[in-house]
Image (tube, rainbow, N blue to C red):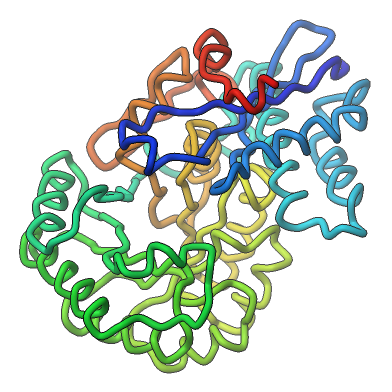
Length: 388
């Protein structure tokens, strides 16, 4: 079997949240065709600011390195692409490009052998994949609005929810400056979390996403206050991801569990996190860190330290499915993230809808990822910038 073609498609999903919320957020799908008529698909989405256009162009750039290769040699092809741009740095942009290719290759291998990807990874250790809801709480501004949204999410079957309550910091997402928040902004965010805790009770896990917005003293203060007042399950990405020294400083001062990893790329960047005991949970992103191959390796690495993994998910259905297949096989697994506001958009691009069951996702036994792309919807939803 040989690869005959590799393609990328950048689509604009309908989140149902309004253009102002989703501008510059696209999904990149990848397809790999073979001379035996089989096709595999993956995802290499990246946000914000048209990041998916960048990764799609990266897919185009590596096409000639893949055509003619045997798609079953997944490990060989992973390393071929990883070393291809080593003088630019193989983590981040390059690993995101690899992710889309890698996921498509695993989907293709599952179809070739007529079995689901999780069987190829060692087989399931659970029947279904527990999830937590990234509530996104679009439009919520007051504590009672956050509380009502949380109650609705729990009523939908979820027992773990995540959100970022510190609205003042929204303009600084991916635009870190001094990492500080005003007293009023802090009070407003903490009050929102307290209102959610009061509304959902002690049995629901509350996860706080700090989005890497803060400096060390601010992160320490917020994490401890939220833990003491509202019993949060974790404080995620307290700082920008570049400094392990800063993360250690926070780790040594906070009582809340720490989760990091969505902006760490490949197993190599997780080694210091685990060796230096800098996090209680890790959350690698399957479409950024290196695909199914790399997510499985990171999970096994974390297992050696008895650290749970909770794959990051804030993109499209390929990310959900790829993360879920790995999660089915991982003993040290906590929950898989999913964005509840994206559910309809996920299914719009699939021939078979995702099988949510309350706070779990069922994968079934269909080969590969278990669902194929709806190419008619993809072509109808192409980003005009990509069509040009």
